[in-house]
Image 1 (cartoon, rainbow, N blue to C red):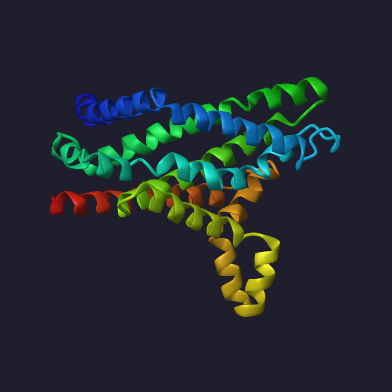
Image 2: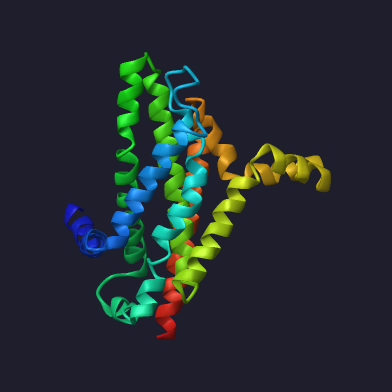
Length: 253
């Protein structure tokens, strides 16, 4: 059993290392991390009014985080498959002893690693509020868990859209539009607009599909099984569709 698992994981690990190496050797990665840290560092102290709230929590970071992701995650995922097409290496990749499922998992895992590094660089804020007050560490951990699940779902969607289009620009625009829509439909203003257009049951159904609606629970320090299942289902569905898209490409080459 262990030998079978090792054999299956070997090509995933190899491609994962190659993708991580590409990130490390890319100037775009440094730019990504710098701008992410600037955004996640400035917004809590400006829009989030970190010092003026007089509360030992990280709501000022977690609340704007979905809006930060709207720009940064598409920038991260747009190259996953579209770049392979641009460089003409997609056909070569598909001829290697690696399945589309393994390749999709490796690419998303590499993107997730970079985003986890970016989130880890915000941990000094946790240390700061611990020194300044007595925060609820369980609520803070729930907030970071929600941010990670939100990021994984959006990364999977971004990878899918990159696999469906020919250019990085198109992948970026489509990913921004998709995750922005899934974020905005959970806002109060969007709910009012939907309520004026659709019946109540349909408005609630649309709102339930929103990422921000399921992210709210984590902001309150509550980890709901339904919210976790929602994000994991989005991840699995997007990964499955990505595999199908890559398989279709393999059949056409």
